[in-house]
Length: 176
Image 1 (cartoon, one colour):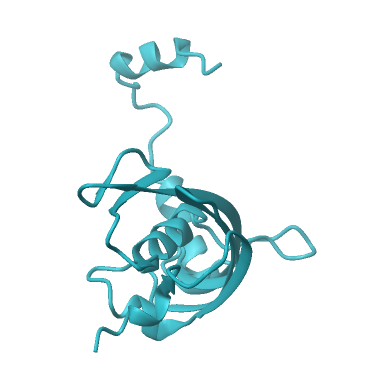
Image 2 (tube, rainbow, N blue to C red):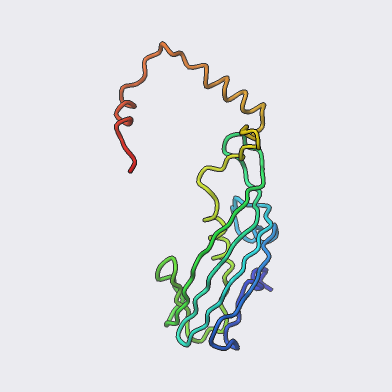
């Protein structure tokens, strides 16, 4: 039996209208995905399933915590995540993704497996830069030994040493 089959929504017997599904995502979920950067998690996924006569709309509400590696000190920490996503499921001849938000499935299907979408949406909730948050005093919760070593290496640069002029051109770039 497929370990991800419990993330399938059987829509064949559902009436037209709104239906709700809840999924608990824990460590075992991520073991099914090769090279997942998330190994530990405690996440709740609430789905509002809007069944219409020719298509479905799935509204994902994701909240919980994931244990990730800090980009600065390389220690693990629990990071809170939250996100809302939308998936439109239509019927066609073959199964394929028309866009990131639209999935086409064959008309003979009676269920849709959303495990891959849950996995991707959880990763979309993660920030690009993953750094320990600051505590109430405004200090970083990163490993203090690593921060000390980083500051030591940062101060090793000789201020008298000229800066490569090629980098000065980048200072003129403005992000708007």
